[in-house]
Image 1 (cartoon, rainbow, N blue to C red):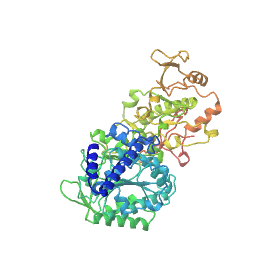
Image 2: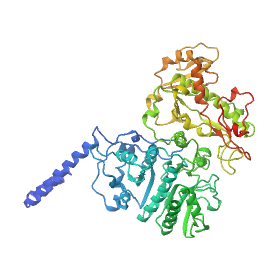
Image 3: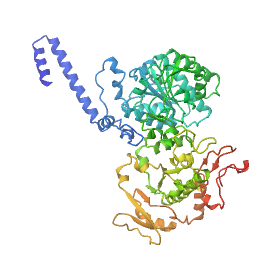
Image 4: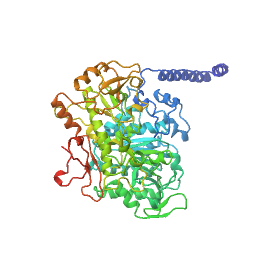
Length: 636
């Protein structure tokens, strides 16, 4: 290449002076550009470095892995190449910009620059498709997780709608493509079903109605959706579809990756994941849907969608595509299979995709409890949520324990309310002991997996949903038994004692766990009648006597403060209780609020049954619904 430039320059010197000037200018430009590229790549003040530069998680639920090459490219700033051809500019030219922060000395562009326009969307579109979510600052960690999964799948045609300027600015400085929805919403968690929640739903419909006239295909999804596999090839299999929507279907209608059989889908069409093509029928639907919601602020966006789409259902478009006519008789709709475009039930409770040996495309945290904290915890249980490094190395370290469950309690007999509560209560008592030890040692408790015999829903049922693939027993999400939002809530220490940090049961298996935590373990084996000692065996294990008091715990484990993880072989009969009765009482007040309800017994009003953290202290305790309105409250 150098020889070529040299020859060219020689030829130029034998030509007119004008050409000498041109060649000199070009050479100087190349040298300056080269200097800029190398300085950007090797600059120690890389603005793109963040916890989200870490490789993606590799779990049973995740199908893809980030290659070493892609991981490297995301952790270094990318020098932009010359402008590509127009057809290429929509995709690859923008790929490097995601996760690359603007220079720190750059001024934030005016709000007008982030306005929703066809040109702004056109900068991100690839193959005429754009993938969009939206939210406010309270959901920033969900949004970053959403973006990270998509970029790990090499998808760059994404945009995030910011409903408040705090989120817009935060995403801009992280290098996340963002636009202003002009909503001027609160930055806090609005809560499901609240008036502000309904306003967010209306914003989604207004957004769809605004974008479709741009002529782009729109894959619209909620921020609590995690993408596990590139969905675009799947959606492209149905080019005639005006709308492809997910659903709340919990009974499989197909056992492969075909669209669900629309005649058999009884669950609501779920608008957390749906794909729109800019056809006249789709535009007509979006406009009418928007008009209905604006006219009546009491209509929930999903109910409004279902109402007008189901105005006419059928016939099938053809014999084998799975598409059908709906709405006005011209709209062609397909229902994404619930086994691989998963709800919180088909993924976490049924594990339908595993049983059918399919690869899931997406996970939407529906069918869950404990609000936003419950959603976050479920994604952490599935090891698909991206947390900052400090989450994996908490101050004080961690404790975990191996639960003890008799085989008969887990597998024998019928799956009844009584057998379910016997199993749950047995585990709850061990967790109560582990929480006390965690509080005493000022460590974060890694919760164990919880086994359930019965599903939890919002209505009466026979134990599992009829026709579903729920196996009994099954490892149930923590929010089936515990109030995750209460466990993570700050409570006054003078009334409830010190807070107790928790982590999900899969925490210690997470690839994001740092080396300094993985390599700092102490195995503790409970023993009967042995003496307390801080001397470990040749294998590194520590024998510790059962029924030890607070002083013994503190004396022995204070010598292991530098150990990151203390793992107990069991916590049954491990701790006799706090010596300070005031602290014991505050601890009781705290943890008795940690447990929730099971719901619900059939043909009973009310049909829910409260879990009781101290069930074993109440002789004759039985799992029955409240018998009177006065009894309908959490246990005291």
